[in-house]
Structure formats: structure tokens, C-alpha cells
Length: 75
Image (cartoon, rainbow, N blue to C red; front, side, top):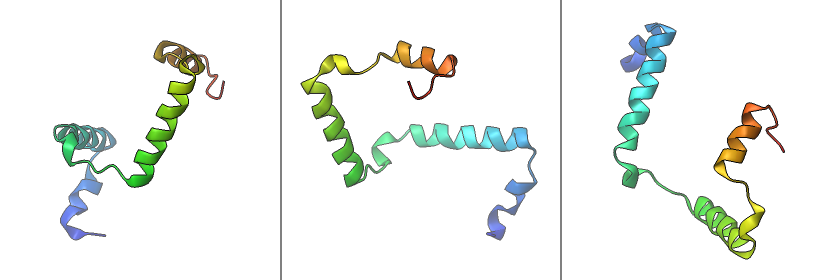
């Protein structure tokens, strides 16, 4: 274990969650610094091409949220 960060493990669960949120927020401030790997770019291009061939094949964000709320994750 890195002794430089040992105090982090002594935080309460609530404090750890807040720290995680703060870290994610700080990362979100510099999205241009987040690397996108080649395989991710390829997957995005493939999905975009599939969508362009059949734009009606996907689900709206509202429909996806509704399925999640109803416990129908794989539908």
C-alpha cells in the first residue's frame, strides 16, 4: 500500500464517497485530458455506422431510464 495515501483508508464511508465525487468532478473539468483509446474510437465508429444505417433501431434515453427503473435491464 502506498503510505502517502494511508489516511484515505481511515476516512468514513461518507467521506470516501465525497472524496470520490470530488475527484470525478475535478477530472470532468479537463475532458480533453482524458485519453480515448483506439479500440474505444473503433467501437464508437462501429456503433455510429450501425445507427446511421437504421436510426430507429435504438432506444430513447427516456425509454432506457424507464426500463432500468422497472428492472428490465436487458430488454
